[in-house]
Each structure stands twice: as structure tokens, then as C-alpha cells.
Image (tube, rainbow, N blue to C red; front, side, top):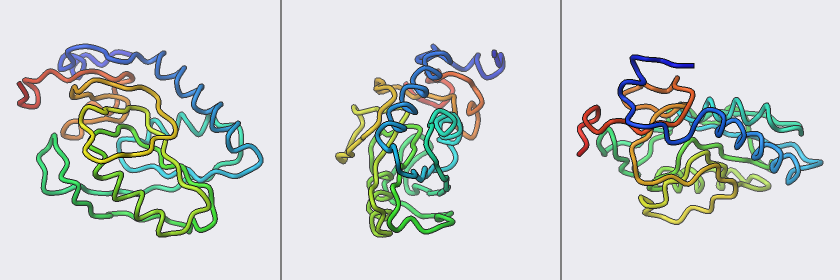
Length: 186
């Protein structure tokens, strides 16, 4: 699939559609094996991780339930997070005593996810693990224990497959590096 208007703003394709598909299948198989005989609750943090979670849950062969949270990091700029987090939409169901997997699109500074993990641990899940499609360790400010990682990426501004800039580019089927002139970068 090619979306010309959006694709013109992409400097390069960092991770192609087929690479993503293969990685999601691999992660789904690992999760199915690791949680065999148990039911897994997938928690997606809106909005960016929706495509990843939708594909991931279809790649998991054990029973899963899903829930959604929406958080807002405020105090930063459009391309930075402050780590100050507000929960806009909380979980719909209790996770007490459940095996929970937080499904993220990207982890960079780790500030928002660090807050979210502490918040979710307070709800007494049986286990709490993290699965991210993209890991950008060069920007990490707090240590985050990533249990399942799709790809480690360099410190570049990426869009596509759920990731956005100004709510655009989420529908690109690949992970692309956004041209700096689009977001005012250098």
C-alpha cells in the first residue's frame, strides 16, 4: 500500500511492512508459549499502539482479553514528553489477579510508561509485563524492563503503523523516518 501524500513527508522507510508482519508473528508465538494454559489481558495505550495490538492479538493462540487506556503526557512539546501523566481513560475491567501485558507502540524516554506501570501494579495484577514494537534506548531517562521487544531503533522521529505527528501518518503500513522540516527538527 502506498499513500503518496503522506509518504512524501517520509525521508526513509526504517522498518517495512513485511518486517513488521514477521516480527508480530514471532512475538505472538513467544507470548502464546510463555502464557500457555493461562489467559492474558492485553492493555493498549491509545492511540498509537492500536494497530500493533490488533495484529498481535491475532497472532496469539491462547485466550486473550483486551482493555484500553488513554493517557496524556503534558508539559512537553509536540515531539517531547514531560513524564507528567494524566489518565484520560482508565481500564474498563479489574486486572486484579490477572496476567497483564502492556502493549506499546514505542518506548523512548520511558517516563510515561514508568508512571503507567506503577499505576497498574497498584491494581494487583498476577503479573505485569511490557511488550513494545519499537524501543528507542538512546532517549531513555528511566529504566524500563521490556519483556518483549520488536525492534530497537535509532534516535530518529518515526511515524507510521500507529505512530503519528499531529495525528497524521498513523495509517502508513510501515515505520518511516519523518523529514525534519515537517516537524521543525534539524
